[in-house]
Image (cartoon, rainbow, N blue to C red; front, side):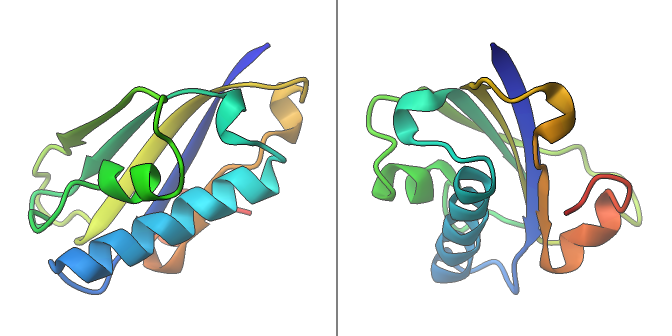
Length: 119
């Protein structure tokens, strides 16, 4: 079955190292909590708030071994009052887990974005 997994993390600042560290933490948690390997991942869409421009979030996934997984980065719409410094992801994966057992991952300040599904 193909499932989509959502996740987000708020990083400290618009800094290359902060973005890479945050995305590494997020991707690692998504993979771990859902029992996935890179072979299970079909594709990942990363978005970041407009205030994060120091690095592409996908680079962190490449450094984690996502060499043959299609990745893309985009910018979130600039909604007034939105939580700043947030990187989001939507991963499409192959898994036997039912939809109700998928663990969506929201870390640091991004927990506030989806209190209903954050684990």
